[in-house]
Length: 590
Image (cartoon, rainbow, N blue to C red; front, side, top):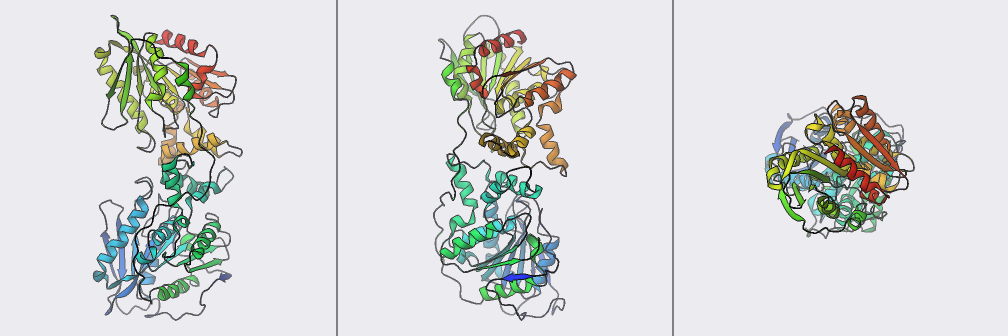
């Protein structure tokens, strides 16, 4: 998504606090006094913690410029047009460093900011190698790279980290981008930025989820604005199609209120990011860099406290599985034990069973929670009740979408099933009589177990309550006009599950979303299914009717039932008679 640093001449330039006539120091473009030196260096151990350096030998230490590419935190690179830009600034007697950083698919926030700060520390430590004055550094970033650059300039005493920050269409507030492209009518690239902000923060922003809310707040540059921040020059276009002017306006206002010098410029046209650097604007940025690096460095100050959330947001969606815990009282004489089926802390299951002489069927219960939250204990009451009906019940945890992207969750369920089969004798179960019950996101995983490969080889039947059988449908509903808060939360967590924004031009991303849809795997020999929704369920019945249609076409039994009301997930057991119908269906198929 990042744009090349080459742009077209602008028809009109509106400037604030800039000098229009500039004398370039150290020669002219294209007339190099000496051959430019260039090298590639690692500033960390990750493959993307790398930078390219461009500089001319100098008799006295020279000022430096750090370039941070854009790409919605999950694309772009230090080469291409940015290499050309780096050489231009190096020819003006600056030591220039074009850096890569870990993507949002590599690490959660603040990982990318940590990389930029680590690169700055490395550059300062190696300053002599590049004839660089380590106290005279300016950082420039484009779009998502602009967010990282402005974050470096406001983190702690940002003015002691760098002398100045230049933001080219800087996404100064990922939260603003999240709220600025809510519907499918929004431009595709704005939706991509929005979705990648969710992946960057690893969560859907709600105030009641304090770790999540604080992380989102920390991505917003203005939340750290203070008097010791670095001065900034924020360049935007009048009709930027990707990054609204509000990003620069809000940041400038916060910095100016703290007493920090801010230069803003809005140019005509619809250029964005690196395209803002033209024959007109590049000399102005150079003059600004010269002005910022000519004075003595500011005194260093300690890093400030973490920020408070910058905006209010509606409360999180209620615990939809809470009614389940009230519906199923504890039966007597149930053995309850916890076991690990893998090495990850969430690869555990709770077993519930009653003693008896005959091998019994097994029921695997999979909790919901948008793949983001929830726990096997949420279904303890349900598990005890089914144990009282003659099942050995295994309530399973799995890695969440914050722990690993798809298909890790499906892999975990497959591993749990394999563990149960291998340990069948310990629980006196018949390994050929395993059925499954899943709710919401857990219903999605249950339907995947029933369709992945030859599903009936894993489980003999699947009951799913409000299954998100196709996360792509959940994404589409969450970006439709009028989407509810619950649907938006589902959209964001489906994005986090896939670790990409669905786009037809990305084969790998499209394949990820397709692989997460149970109906994509429907085939002969899959497990029979009983799928239930309510009429006003925020996960609509279409998830199940489409899956049933695909299964019946390959001669697999599938029943999709729709009840009255707005019950979701485990709350569907409040529907009169449903619990008994589910039990009857399971007994018929185990």
